[in-house]
Image (tube, rainbow, N blue to C red; front, side, top):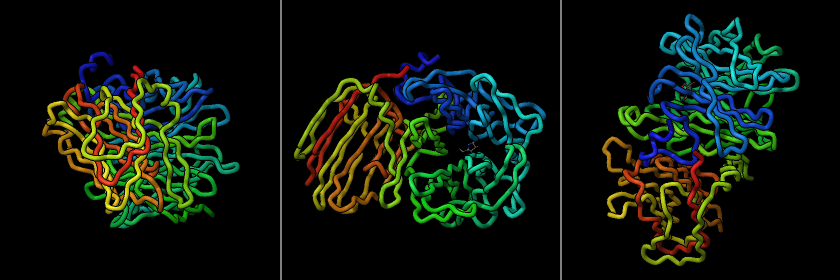
Length: 465
Ligand code: DQQ
């Protein structure tokens, strides 16, 4: 089925996506008997968000994925008849146990449900007394938004964080505990936001320890925008006190989910949304991509550091390497195709500018420009000419990216068809979408003022399919 998309230049070659139709949030990430399991929000019938199931894929190495049959589907006349929304999988004394949100009545009723697997996560049996939590607590003053359970263990109890909101106040993450996974006691909000500042509703919570600190990642629904935010702080007596708050990604990443792998790495996957119209992706026959998994850590300022997993290096093909390029005018750099891993370090003087252009057509009509201005400390991704279709989103991304004293600009750029993952100094993330109209392109161009490229490596990536 994947071959029918081989003439589509937007289709990624080294990011995971199902063979066809719609995918959104990653769900139920877990390493089981050494293998990485990725479940995801999936509509098996069309490339639009509807009719949610859990799709399933498995990998030995985080690079090559094998598609497995649908994992969990809605059951008529039950709590999940309207769809299986996001959630997680935990290891309950050797039994893989899934928690997800069952929805009903056009998703206006959201309840928490459970299922177990007895055949290595292939098929799932729903708990016969689902739902295990029927409604949000009265203090939320609403009954509609209550979803995406995330579980962890604390001594001899299980904890669950659920995304929600407190009406007229803001987003809220609700905290529950249980000894047996079916009887849940509501404790209090783990954290409550402010609708004026950080969104009206918070979904897809992740809460975990990183070093000495605790990190909360949420996907926030604000007025006209959806953004992933993170908080770093301390957790005591079931309350979380953030000390640092920042935007996790400045563009298209949404609904990320993390897991701890057997090597103790905190890995994060995320849905990369589409930047084209519903009609366009419905017609294309596929929509939604998973980001390359990132390893999370914290720096000394409590900022989240994210690095694509080193496993990705196994599919690096031809390499183009440059050193100490003193920039004057525009320079063309050889690189073929739309599947590239670019690693660049630039020393920029005061009032300096550096620009890297990619996915440029030879006739000059298309191209995407990634620039950094040392005076404004701004990263700018210009998509005005990223594609030719008026249906594609083309607004620019402007991101304040303050370099520390003496720090060079370090960019890691993963271009894969329409996916553009940009990490600046491993802490500013801008994951965008561009839709170049053909495979042919004119390599990479770099230009700058008061800028010296210390090193530049461009790898042409091999396809994982
Ligand atoms: N997507 C799921 C929900 C979640 C949302 C539904 C976030 O569970 O809140 O597909 O993208």
